[in-house]
View 1: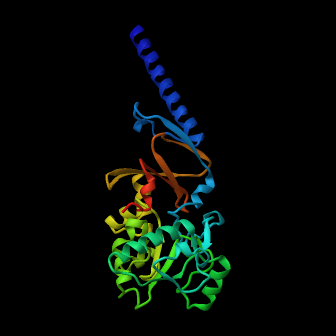
View 2 (view 1 turned 30 degrees about the vertical axis):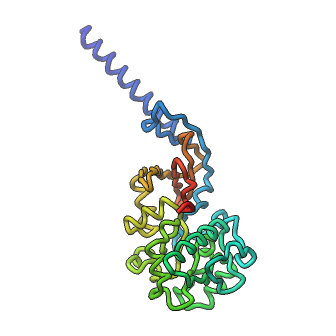
View 3 (view 1 turned 120 degrees about the horizontal axis):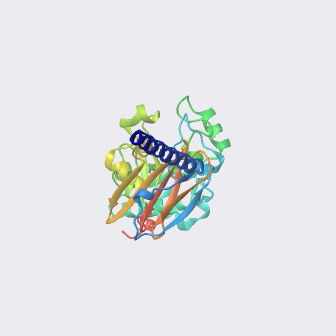
Length: 297
């Protein structure tokens, strides 16, 4: 009898401990804090960064298509008119003086063009960059159905996309188009609408449309032949990816975000945050994110 009573006490105690562990887990989740404690090492110190809910709609990795429109927070704050910044228009032409783009993207584009010149590819022209919602809507009304997206559904409304051409011939045949398709990833750009991804992107092949996503993301997409849609789905599935590039390891984390939250990151690493425009954010860690724009090559 005493033995049965003793066993009953043990079972009740185990049940109490299990309930406490579940409760603590739920409390942690309700606090909207993501803690990768199991991955922490005693040698590293960590800092806590706050992530606002609207971060989902900001950054270089936003997916913009027929299902996911541009939010106001997504528009780059450093959009400039290139013709008024002659130091950024070196080695290529502008179709007209009204073309705008994110200043940071414009700087990387110029570096990329200068690298192409070393390979004797030097007939680049920017035909289109950032468009306001009003400009996009006007273009949508003028063009045939499917050629120009409605206002808010085009990457040109972000400030991260460029329509790049050759002054000599169509891009699908031009050395400029071939060079970009092979090398633009090294500077953080991707060919956004490839010929073999039309069913996935929902957009026809556009050999002129390049989108800035930044390193290391462009390198991963190039290596795996990912469209942006496929890459973001890959990150959502994997949750964590570590990739070595040029001797540095980038750690990439995906987090679903439904409210303001906090994330712990190593204090000795740089980090960048981008939303995906679909309810999640991507945190990219690197010892030196300054190499994002390949400025030292």
